[in-house]
Structures are given as structure tokens and as C-alpha cells.
Length: 469
Image 1 (cartoon, one colour):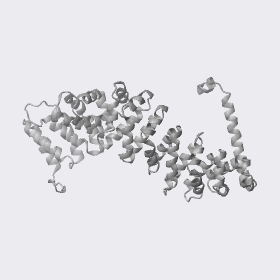
Image 2 (cartoon, helix red, strand yellow):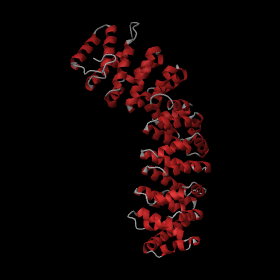
Image 3 (cartoon, one colour):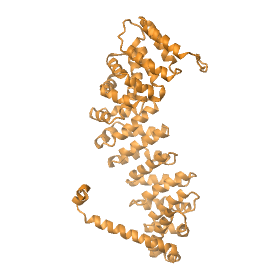
Image 4 (spheres, rainbow, N blue to C red):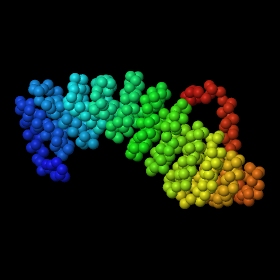
């Protein structure tokens, strides 16, 4: 067996024989022997075969239910709970699932109501592992009144036990009925605290639950008042990739309400989302893009966002540059943003990136330029930066999206009399004329659709489609 300070050695144990010896020890009418044998089983559980551990679970649950006849420390209940805690970690959740099916959870909760000291600590650890490794056990806990027990203990327990309670709460809060109870019972502050303390896995779960709770309009104020912004922004800084994505998404959900756009930006969110945009996780990039589009509703936020986007566009990462150009493409349609983009120095960089080696970069940049070309001052800046000949060359590109973006921009250039002979050569290009005609048809179709919608009344827009059949 492994000794302190030495590497773990492979154990040469006849596990079937060891299991029989354990059963023999439990069969004896000797409580001290039960505790010693169960304590040894807990130590060996990380090496024992999964099927053997599965056979110990009913025995351990039965020991958990026995009332101690002596003042042994630890008691047999404590030894059994500790061993179940160790077993729950094994088998990638399968053994934790068996523990839930064995009826152990009601016994753990019943003991928890009256336990204190080391027994309470062990019971909480066992319960935490049971709900962490097996999702179905969370429903069992809630069904047997476990949520109320956990919330009551959070209000009264010592600080050294709070971590285990918060980690249990973070697992339970992934259930909708639990989140509803947390909101009604004014326990939102505990959920936010669970995102601040404990293991990173637990904090990530709490952040996920916060995001789900944030979908409820009346919950957002309670979340913000409980310090959600600072907690989730910390996770955006110190979490692993998946935790950052979860925290970023939760913040995005809460920030979708106009009242929280400024506070979130003022709390320092923009640089952290810029970092996420430069990361490698596709979902993280998508979330950062969406949140930037929300935050940019406020002009001062838009200015800061564009500054970060320009910095990214000057960088070396093709993926990050494509993502930044995609955000600019979205933001270019905001009423105040064209002047911000123009003053940021982004336009010469975008024009240069039309010749980037990466096709995704070129597609996103051409889309941003097409959107910017609707603004007169931006058209002039684009033309002065040499955009027109590059866009003309792009009309021959293999990518249909790039050809369409280039043509859209060139059509806008062609309708600007101030550009004069800069665009005259383009007008006679057959490829431009073909695409120009198609774009004109699309614009006419869009205008007709908009006019039709304006003439529809509210009753028509809300009509049940089934009534039309």
C-alpha cells in the first residue's frame, strides 16, 4: 500500500476475499469492528473494482441507518457516510447513481437534521458528492425536502461548513423548481455566493443556474443587488475556458435588460469580453459578439468596444480578426457608430484586410465594409483608403458571399455623385452590372415586404396560424 511521501504502488489484493472479510466483520456484533472495517474500505475504495464497490453500497446504507450503541468517534454512521462519499466519486457517476437508488439520500437528510460536529461535515460531503456525480440524485434530494434543509443550514451554519452547502446548492439549482424556490424564498444571495466560493466545477454550475434564473425578468434585480456582476466577471478572469463561457453567457442574459447595460460596462466587462472574442472557443466568440451588440446600444460603450476591435484587427490571429470584423459588421448599422468607427482608424485596416490570406477574414471584412458604405462620410473614407479597386477585384472571387458584399458596397459607391470618375470604370463592368441588377431586385422585394407589413393590423400579426387552415 502507498506510504506517506511515496508514490502509490499497485495493490496486490484478492478483492473477492477482501469483500468476504468485510462482510464477516459487519456480521459480527462488534460496533468497533464495523467502524474499523468500514474506515479501511473507504481508504481502499479508490483502488477497488467498481463492481465490488457496487456490492458494498447496500451494506453501507444499512450501516448508515443503525443507531450507535456506544460513544465511538467516529460513529458507525459517520464511517458509513464517509465511505459512501468515497464510493460516489468512482465509476463516472454510475456508483453515485446506485447510491441514490439504494435509498441512502433520505437517510443522509434525516441524519443531517440533528447532526453536528464531524458527523454533519461528513454527511454534507457525502451529499455533495452524491448530487455532483449523479444528476438524478438532485431530484431525490428535492423530493425529500433536502432543499429546505440546505437553505436553513445556510442561514445558521458555521462558515467552515458553508462551502459544502453552497456546492450542494449549485447542483440542485440546475433544476427549475429549485431556482423558483430560491427566488421565492429570497435565497438568490446564496446562489450568487455559490458562484464565488467552492470548487471551480461548483462555481461554474452556480453561474449556469444564475444565467437560467436571469431569464426571469423579476429575478434580475435580485441577482444584480446580490453582487452577480462582480462574481461572474471574476469567473471570466480566473475560470477555465468552459467556466468563462458559462459566466459570459449568464452576464449576457442579465445585461439584455436596458437598466443593466451601463452598470455591466462600468464594472469592467468590455475588456473581458474582448479577451473572450480572441479566445479559441467558438461559443465564447459568439457570446462575446452578442454581448457587444447589446452593450453598444450605449454610445460610450460602443466607443470602448470599437477600440478593442481595432486592436484585435491589428493582431496576428486570423480567427480573432474575423470575429472582430463580424462585430463591426453588426455595429456598423447602429446610428451613431459609423463616425465612431471612422474616428477609430478602423477603415484603413479593414481595407487592407480585404487582401488577407484567410477567407473568413475577407468575408467578414467585406461585409463590414458593405455596411459602412451606406454612410456618406464612410464611403469617402473607404474610397480614400483604396477600397474601390480591391472591391472590384473581389467581384471575381470564388466566394459568393464576398462577391455579394463587394457588389453591395460598389452599388452604394456608384450612387454617390461625389465619387465621380473613381467609380465610372466599375459601372461598365459586366460582372458588376449583373450583380447590381440582382441587388436592385432584392432591395425592391424588401421594400415591398416592408410596405405590406405596415398595412397589416395587430389582429393579423397575432392571428393563430391554425385558423388559416
